[in-house]
Structures are given as C-alpha cells and as structure tokens.
Image 1 (cartoon, rainbow, N blue to C red):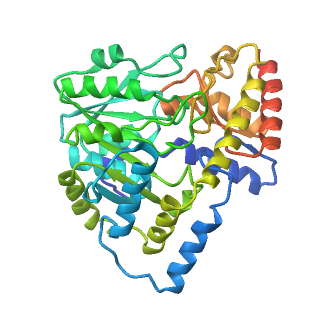
Image 2: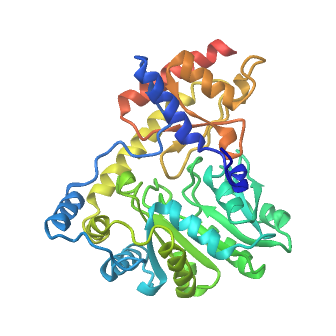
Image 3: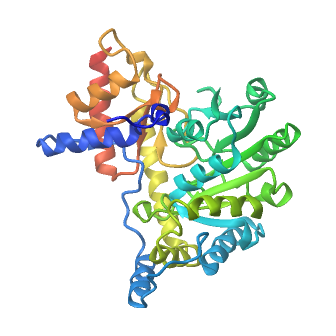
Length: 392
C-alpha cells in the first residue's frame, strides 16, 4: 500500500522497538532482565488514583476546553510557583497528551521549511523525527563524555547558522542523565537571546535530580523572555504516571493559542479524568515523589558501583533522570562492531534488554535504565559485566 512521502522521514522508536523484542522473547519463554524501560516501576500514588476515581463517580466525563480546564492550568502554574518561585499566568499553559504532544505541537507551531533546530547530542530519539515532520532540519550538536554530556556554548556557537530557529534542551537528559545548573541555563538563555534563537526546554524529569545537583528550570527565564522560550513538562516520570498521558507546555499566550488551534484539529482536549488526577498530583503532597527520587538515587549508585568494575567501560555520573549511558566501545569486536550489535547480542545471548546508543546519536554507548528494582538491576549488570569480559 502506498503511504505518504513524509513517512520516509520517520523511523520507529528504538526504545519501544527494543521493548517489543524483549516482550516477544518473554512470550517464547525466555527470561529477560529489562534495562531498556523508560518508565518508573512504581505505581501511581494513591491520592492521584483516588482523584481519578472520584472524577468518574462525579461523571466528569465530557469534553473540556482544548488547553485544559482552568483549575488544571492553575495547578500547573501553582506547581512552578511553589517549587521554582516563578509566577506564570494560566493563559501561558496548555495541557497535552503527554510531553510528546507538547513537543510535536511546538515544532509545528514554530518551524518553517528551511529552519534549522540545534539538538545537543546525545539526544532523545524522537526529537529529530519530530523536527523533520515539521519541515525543518535537525542539527546535532556534539557533547563529550568528559563534560558529562553537557553541551557547551562554544559548541552551540559553532553549530548555529542564520537558518537556526530553535534549540532543544533536555535537562535532566534522556539518555545521559546530564543536568544543567540554573547558572548554566541562564548562560545558554543569554546566548540564545543574543542570536534570536528560540529555546524549547524539555523538563519531563524535572524532580528527579540527585544531590549535590539541584532542580533547575527554564521557567525562570520564561518570565524574562516569554517570546524566546517554552518549557515542556509532564507527570509521567516524576509522578509514575506514564500511561496517563499527562503533559503540558508553558509558552507565550500567543504560542499557546496556536498550539491549541492545532490540538483542536487533532486530539482536542486531553482525557477529562486525567485532568482531575493531574490537579491532585500537582497540588497535593510531594512525599511520594521524594520517595521515588531517593530510590532512584540509591539504584543509580548501586549501578555505578558495578559498572566501575568493568575495565573498558566509561560512565559519567548522571545528575538526574534514571538512565546510565556508559561508553562500551572498548568491548566492540569484528563480530560485535557497534552499539546495535552489542544491544542485540546482549538481548539474545545474555537475556538483557538495553537500548543502542546510536538511536540517541552516540554509537559508543548503550542506554541502561535503573527504573527497576534493586535485585533485577544488580543481577542484570552482574551478568552483563561477565558477558562483556568474554567479548574482550
């Protein structure tokens, strides 16, 4: 069957593809230890589930305004006021079907054919394809293992051209866990303003930051430069609400209206029940988030301790999210020459699911998720270390 030419611009998600392969092997009866999952293994906190149940009992099941009910938009602004001290008007907020839709709508509303978008590498797998679907061109900006995969102003300046329209910044990062301080964000913002480059700040992991690092948000820059920055967030990662598909964007009210127009012709409002659950999450106690954050910090340290015993591995300490991105190219061989081959070999021969780094723009590395229980994490990494030694 003939499909649209634009489909040539899109590749299947490598992370979802690896999860599907692992699930297929499980159906065949094989034991798989999964380090590929990009979602918390915790359940959604009870008070959030209770709010959703009440919404159903109250018959809150009809269409709502496209950008979200006013109380949800106010809850999002209240969250930023409480945690970051930033006042944001509710007219600058739109609720979306996950952070992905916020990003997709932003790219469509902002970009024109011929525009270039700077994407620091390693990058989340969906950024380049989304940018291409909007008719623009993604431009990878390399970072280094030595810098902890933080992009530098010098690298951004080298990559920028007169066609550069936007910069996508992801902090904490998927896949590296790299996290920019408030001072670093301010410096990048100042550079972008000087070049008239719009910043899209993807902060989906905003509360999963580990000491001594501290949470930081471009929302503070938004109050100063509302026409130069948009902040994308959501509840999937920090609140263990991946399947609820609750995302949002903070942007200039004119841009929010443009995104709302797009959304009105695609998905319309997000699920009414999810909106009530989101209000409970954003306005309620954050003890549950802190418990998960501490668990992730413990798992990170457990994983790093094991990886440090691998003689040919190099892994920066991530300051946030729940991923490790070790360079394992020292283990490559003629039979296993790259990250794709290594990831597939680990899955089929060692029963460990990972994601190849080439999907994130860095072929020396694999992405390992520590969003799993301690026992599974320790067992998987121990087996993986033994397997890598045999490749040497």
